[in-house]
Amino acid sequence: MVVLLLELVVLLALVGLLLYALGVWSARPAVPPGADRQRLSGRQQARLADAVARARWTPAHDEVDGETRVLLRRAYPGPDGLPVVLEERVYTTFPASDPAWESRFTEAMSGARFRCSYLNAEESAG
Image 1 (cartoon, rainbow, N blue to C red):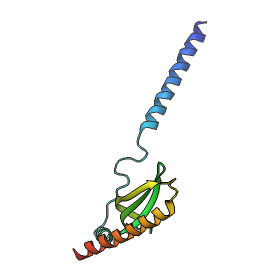
Image 2 (image 1 turned 90 degrees about the vertical axis):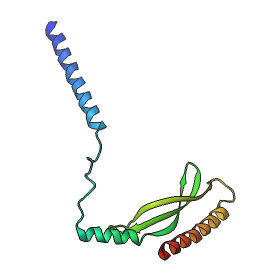
Image 3 (image 1 turned 180 degrees about the vertical axis):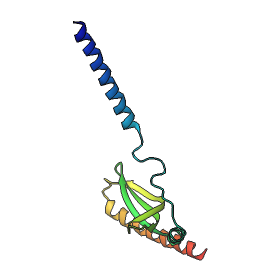
Image 4 (image 1 turned 120 degrees about the vertical axis):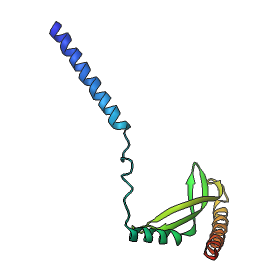
């Protein structure tokens, strides 16, 4: 009987240790701090600075919580060809279930395109 009780205590201690280790492992960050940052050479820094300087404003849209958002995004093409967003502004929002969604969306995107062309012209003049 004493041996059985001792085995039960050891088993509970091992389960507790396993649960503790699992909690510590799951609470750690997925990527170690600074792992995503690489040292860039002078040439790579210059290329990145040039790409950021050539960033352009473009219209975009998405849907969040049943609301359609028309956005103004300032982005440049990244090394993989996908856009890297530097800044994002909400131009307008309206319900995604709006019966006049198509006309509101068309009008909002047109206004966002005009605003983006204005922002791009303003930045190129400066």
